[in-house]
Length: 211
Image 1 (tube, rainbow, N blue to C red):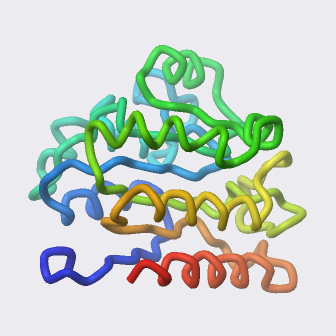
Image 2 (spheres, rainbow, N blue to C red; image 1 turned 135 degrees about the vertical axis):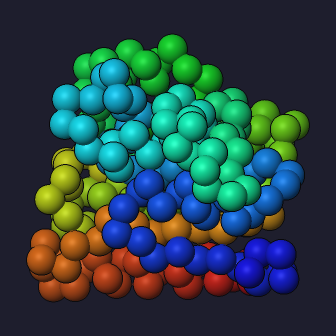
């Protein structure tokens, strides 16, 4: 699909789907803009749950499951310096230590509110653009504050508003060619009033502006 010039939009139950999506994009390497309430940066050595989705970003940048991920045709880890984790606010202790020692850029919701979207993100985009002009946007919908939309059992307070989320998409589109996007982790059992569905539709509409 990506090779034909179409825009891949993946709707997936879990974040580990990123391995297949990135494998399908081919060269050159992309940036990763990972929007999630959680770090997804555990490894088999740090995890206390064994939850594979909690290792998804770590897998995408080559921190773990290297041999297994290499069995997916076309997959190559994205360099950590090209990965941005936005909106995360819940971490396991060892996971946070690992993340802090990595080259992954972490932008929490409070930093966005203190400095503004553009002021916080534009300098980072400029830095990443020295490595790549393409971006993969990954949305775990629990990046949203539960007051905006309760999307799954892992929802955590202090998240992004939908306006902030759409603003991030717009800023990414200004700077990068979108290679693909994924919307993940939606559980309809937790979606009161279909707020999460409406939020996802809003994200898709914002993404479609670049197609």
